[in-house]
Image (cartoon, rainbow, N blue to C red; front, side, top):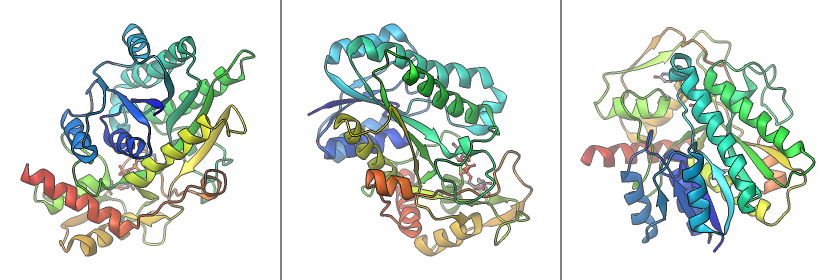
Length: 341
Ligand code: UFG
């Protein structure tokens, strides 16, 4: 079983990826400092898999500690690097923390990996690198635009760092950059899912908490955009589908099939849905009437973005499987499970 180090492996996307890795025959090794994740994710993973996954409770920006992990595990074959801060608004208030954590942890990893002969990296990037695109859907060749937040800038900078490191004459690193669209939903077992701390920033956890009575009502941030119903359009991908894209990417790297030192893929459904469509799809999927109203626009929101998913389909053979309705139903099931706890 090839060992794959998963930084941020107790987080939302990380935990689902750990499960899919193990199911695909890999041995995931988790690194997480629990600064934005919870220990309960480990119990969920263990319960789904019927076995515990090795975990190192360290900050992956701590070089000595990270070296210790590579030393202890010896033959790590690849790294999936999720560990990062991800709240757009918070990044505006605390930019230095974002640069230090998101860029710093990548730099530390890139410094340590070659010393242990680890050449394969899958990096969590984001559709945020496209900024406000001129045309839709966005392909991997769509030019990136100025990011609307320090968070977005860290993703752009990390992509550039990987490109520069890979262009060095002595480079042996192979990287797949996965540009995620909007992950939603939870594992079908409802044993792992998204655990937002405090008031959720993201749409779907806000919807499920409102339906559960934790929040009074959802505010839709603007209905005067130049979109079919005036609300923002996004590409909502089920988190297990997204997790599976990492397995395909890791396999491609281990099989030495990557055609270039750095390959970039959009990971989305290729489908754009408006906020109102998501609200109505949730109402249908859950049987709950949602209390919502239209409010002002949220600064920094991109009017519309969704993926051209052709490259992932043709090159990786990756296609999403879960409908918006099923994704939202899984979010609702997860919310109800959380409420019982
Ligand atoms: N929205 C609301 N009300 C809410 C929350 C969100 O109307 O209470 C709307 C937003 O305006 C947006 C849509 O729902 O139109 C989705 O918002 P999210 O916050 O869930 O997701 P974003 O598309 O803003 O952000 C996501 C990721 C970021 C990433 C960004 C890039 O969460 O990590 O995409 O566009 F940077």
